Length: 224
Length: 224
Image (spheres, chains in turn brown, yellow):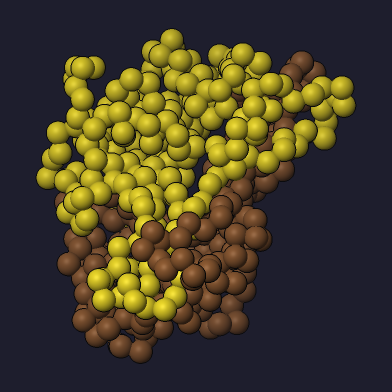
């Protein structure tokens, strides 16, 4: 896939049918949502039963990286190349319409379909793990102790190509039926933000060690 | 299932293998997480491909309710009684350990496995839809216009029994390897909170209509 591609080609499986006006296939829109979200939900199937598990991800170019224990069931299942789904959702607000029926939420979500492969190349594996730490707290990699060989061995990293992808976005005020605009109640949006509170030092941290600038600014900038 | 049951019996599929110390099977713990989360992620399978879609849920007693368009593919698939998974995740904080390897997140999650049935009884259907609105914004049902018969027809409601359920919780400071406690960097938690901002009135709302008390207090109480 060329890096110059600007849109994902919708497939039958990623074409948004419900509320098609909310669908987005632009690469920059998708990447922004993936990069903003702190967690994703991974879907996979074992013996006909779907499982949905929260996880941490990071994007590097046209690939999404996931990591976990080498001993874990989930990644061992996924590295076999079974179909999977990674979904990321940013909740932006509650939409209170006049009618109960038109109540909604403002959100930005991305659905990635594909098959994972295990990252075995040590350089790519280290780069992916760094990307995951940096994705969550930019600046952290510089300070934290890097993985040892044995820690690397205990960690499995999977990569999924960003190819079969779609985003869905709802924003703005409620969309009531025309007649309902006379209904006598308040209507509008309650915006929601994921915010970071003041950092809590580890009780075993020496009291002289202050939170670093990248942690303070993480909290100061408000919305995560 | 008796309402007096205090714990879900773990099955092979809901027994937490990775980090078993984080597993919780108590009913009150599970219910609290389900009731707190504004959205869930629904997992289901179509032709071998898992899909994970964000949705709004509500719990009533020992059942979880989901709703959506009667014309939508997802609920039409699910009402056929295929295996599904509903996962709810509350993100509580970022855990910055000394080693990159021990970085983590504090969270509370619930995984519900089961099979959905369509709610066709009109009274139960209306009650479920009310529960969904009240779950998101307590107090809203009193003011919003109730669904018409035609709106009820356009909405499908599914119900899943809370039987095969587990929760997973991580909280507290990082857990570094003993030797790493000497590593010279800050360590601790950055707590995360989903917060509600000042309500934004619908541009078509008459300027004399103020946000009601239940909206103001929703925002005032801080964390959603």
